[in-house]
Length: 103
Image (cartoon, rainbow, N blue to C red; front, side, top):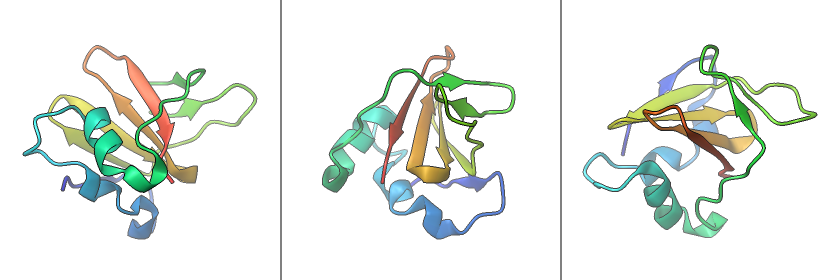
């Protein structure tokens, strides 16, 4: 299990089981771990069309207001951010990213 650090005031229950789906001892990237360990929700299925602002860490989908992260964790070189509405972002060291809903 990895530890998430709060970026805003939130209730830990907002993270659900997500911290338990990721492990430093598992050599696979975050997306692969989430895909396998989040079975009841269908795994990791990124959605295209999102924009990520690396300065304020917000994500935005066309036509929606920005989402601001509530928690962050690192899994080796990857950064995992959790947003309201069960949105999860995985950012790679090169700045590429994927967003999926994990509810």
